[in-house]
Image (tube, rainbow, N blue to C red):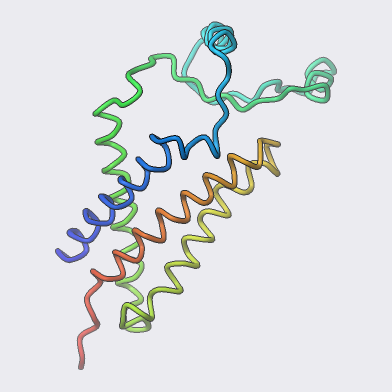
Length: 182
């Protein structure tokens, strides 16, 4: 079990570095648009009227007015944090690393449970890649279908999720001990 804990930290470090490349470099421009400073100010002022931190679907409702607003567009899913904070908050980065380590540990436990059926690294590669693909497709590619968000962001984040889960999963596959011979 110590091997899995160490592996989860190594895998989390790798996925953390990938996250930096995907979201803190110009590569992120493939998946995210930037509004003008004037538009950002207008939107930020409007967000203050929301009242509390939460996820809002705008417009929302079943009244004739809400339906007409929805049909006319634009629509949005807005994730609001009323507190704000620094863009690279060390606490958030630490919590993110912990999230990645726990996720990799769970992935390692999945592989550990299947170690008799998947006794070697080579036998674990395809299951890890399929699991990464399923997670990325399920979590990200449904958004533009169900919420009518943009495909560019969905494909970008699905790709980043797949790459991170695949790299982390392959690292975990290295750390899963071989089954004991009886």
